[in-house]
Structures are given as C-alpha cells and as structure tokens.
Image 1: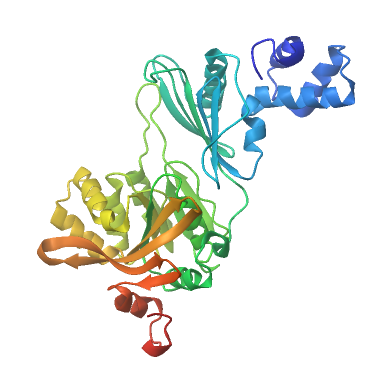
Image 2: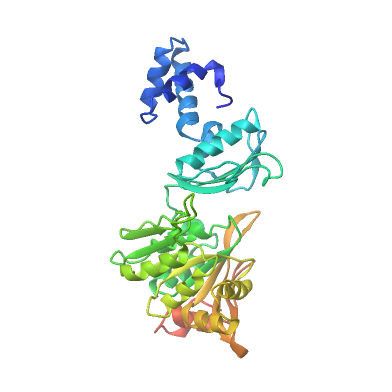
Amino acid sequence: MPGESGPEGLGPVRAAVLSDPSPVTGARVAEALRSSGRLLGTTGALEAVDALTADLRGLGPLQKLAGSERVTDILVNGPDQVWTDGEDGLHRAPVSFGSDAEVRALAARLIAAGGRRLDESCPCADVQLDGYRVHAVLPPVSAGGTLLSIRIRRRRGFPLAELLSGGPWWQQYVEAIVTQRLNFLISGATGSGKTTLLSAMLGLAGSRERLVLVEDAGELDPPHPHVVALRTRHSNVEGAGTVDLGELVRQALRMRPDRLVVGECRGAEVADFLAAMNTGHAGAGGTIHANSAHAVPARLAAMGALAGLSREALALQAGSALDLVIHLERGPTGRRVQEVALLQLAGAGNLEAVPALVNAVGGIGFGPGWAALAGRLFPGQDTGKIPGP
C-alpha cells in the first residue's frame, strides 16, 4: 500500500488500526473502516480491507504476487522494479511503490516482525517469517535504493514424479537412494530446486523413522509424520547468543536421529556432518551449492578448510561418509536432475565424482560409475534385471 496516506485516502483508517496495540486482524480493519464513515460500497470495502490488511500485516503491494502458486521469489530492486521468479523464470511484475521510502518501510516492518533490526547500524538482515524468508539491504551497502528479496515457502508438497522430468526412469533410482539409506548431497545453483527435491525425497523415508533437520532458514517441509527441526540463531544486539549450524549438528546427534539432514552445507559445519555420517548415521542428506557434480569435491574441500581439515583429511572423511551426489540444473524447460555421480576416493587422497547416471537427449545415459551404483541401489538383484545400459 503506497504512502502513509494509503490508497484512496485510507490513511486515517490505517492510523486508527495502529493506535490499538492488539494484533491486526481482518475484523479489526473492517471495523475501523466502518467507523470511519467512508462509503465505498460492498466491493470497494472488501478491496480496502484487503489492501489495508496486506499493508499492516502482510507484504503490502506484493501480497497479490505472493498469492500466485507459480511464484517462488519476489525481488524488489527499486520502487518501480519488482520482479518475480518461478517455474518459467524471471518476469517483471506490474507492481510498483511510490518511493524508495515505501520499500524501506515495508522491509523494516518485515525484518522487525522476524525479531531483527534494519537500520543504518544494521543495513543487511535476513529473517524467517510464517511462509516467507525475507532478506533486505539498505544503502549505502546497496548501490541504489533498498533491496528486498522474498522467498516464498509453499505449503503444498511436490510429489517426486512431478519434480523429475525424466519420468519413471529417474524416479526408480531416486526412490532407491532413499530406500537403501544411502548418504547423499543434492547440488545445484540457486533456484535449481535443491530444497524442494530434498523435501520430496525425505517424504519417502519410513514412517517409523525420526528425521532431524538442521537449517539456517526453515525451508524444508517433508511430508513425513516424524520430523524435528532445528534452526540457527543470529546474535543479539550485543553480539551474543549465536547458535550456528555446526553446533546444531552436534545437538542433533544427541536427539536419536534415524536420518540427519542439513538443509545446506556452506561452511565449517561440514566437518561435523561428515563425522556424523561416519558414525553409523545412514540415510543422511543435505544440499550444497555447486556448478556441477564434478565441482562438489572442490566445494567440500573448501568448506573443510574452514574447519581446519586438510584436503586429504576431508577426502578421507567424505569418501567414507557420502555415497553420491545428485546434481540439478535449471534451463529453459525448467528444473531437472542432470546427473547422479558416485563420490569415491582416488589416488593421492583426492575425492572425485564419478558419473553414474546422466540426463541425456532421449533418455538416461550411464557413466563409468553405474555398475558400482547399481550394486548399492539394487543389492542382491540379478545384474541382468537391473535397469541399465
């Protein structure tokens, strides 16, 4: 809702609602509108209530964009530069703010709702709200105006068949990864669907298994009856009270997990995660940013260095802890599994990703790692009956 005065001169109604410290509800907004004496008609009154409620409690002028099931991200680069991302990529949205001050006011309210501050002393902030992950940056850190990025968490889960563009061929392999309790990482770029696929795969775990999730931002929502979630905590104004991913991984090990899941491996916590998988915690999973499956060993080595592990030590840990990596890519036709690669130790203490399944034109291609992967996915089966080359 642009401006302090609001659309169609509803500023006094907004002020009346804010004068009462009780929670903002649709009923309160409607009552304040009725008491103002404004004659808007039934349709106009409903539109005014929706606009005021979105401004005071929701995402303001961005609320309608968030209501679309096709939108996964809302990106505000300036008052008249609002973009959405989703199934069909980035698009300019027909929404604008009156000024940068309005963008800043919305960003500050959302960040405050998440228990953090956004001002000159703290120009960058990230919070998790009910259904949203909000990140904001203020000038001068932002070269232009206020930047606002909103990731929308959908309540609807996605079945595995809907996520795997390769059809039943890919599905049987991915299901076997979960059934055989292999330890895996899902790699890919931002927005490639790593978290969505991980949630769907965790939903395949047995109903008697206990899943303990460790995340920086609560995005995982697997359709499973026994899920416990732990989230990191940022420091307070005095710089104390931080609880990082490494600490949460150590705490999760004391919570009797059947499957330990790290939402995203990005730093020194990888050492604790790999140590956990080397102590009998099979079926663990997580995500990692990487340009390809081949690049995952280098990414792991870089994160291991943050924990004080040498490249050789990291390779030994990862080689025995992780079975494979599933790499996702996002192209013109959407998101897809591009490759499944085995993580194996090579000579001189190096870790390498050996292609096993590759998304090829006309179907699935089988790489040099397929024979070893087939033995893990379908143990005890006649090799002649295993789907393969």
